[in-house]
Image (cartoon, rainbow, N blue to C red; front, side):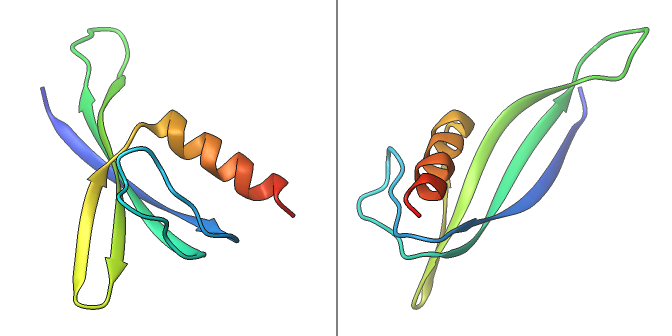
Length: 83
């Protein structure tokens, strides 16, 4: 199976925290990376999500934290409703 990656940027207007984070992160734009694996099918091309990561940057350090995309979606919904 072949793998590919995609990336997207999400924007938080307020401080946020996801499961697995040791602290809250400030508002801003954050890059999300998703690794996809092709499915072995004859008739159609399909992908299966293997991993999703958020890149967290603070002075001198960038770390990639593996996250559940559902947790990210919920955090973005909470952020939008906080207005």
